[in-house]
Image (cartoon, rainbow, N blue to C red):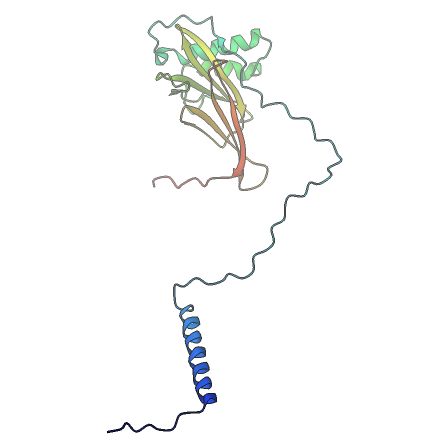
Length: 237
């Protein structure tokens, strides 16, 4: 039995239907790009420009001299007896401090006025007491040899803090640090002595880092920085 065929649609209708299908498919593909998680354009990026040197015809300023070291070389306190045990904790703090004051006076660089010096000498054997300007001694390894160094701090009447550090070399007491500052805090971290001082602007501080200089055998300035002050956590937490 012969198949019955209907009338064939005009060619224009066929083309119109095909166009509709193409548009619908394209819309479906574009619609899929808007789904959650799909990458989206952030817009046009700003043009990147290279550095523009200002005043190129002017000569640069001469390089500044490096930060001065606390000491150029260790200063032995020869007035003190030798400590053959090698244990710096066995030293008398008062004896070390008085020997340091005498050595500075011999070099013509006294640190304290006469009245202040007399009070410090009198209480040097009681460091850490409230009535004494000499702070309690601290013992930390500053040169990385596994042995402690002695750190002394004396606060002057105008709140200037003088910090000395000492090590033993063949039983002889050697001064390896002589620093003065108005510190907010002082700490030892990774064999380095770090002094934090209030900055010129509120909320900022300066930081001076002293590190062991193996060549000169002293603690010298390794870094000086300036930044926002780290809030001190409340006590008891």
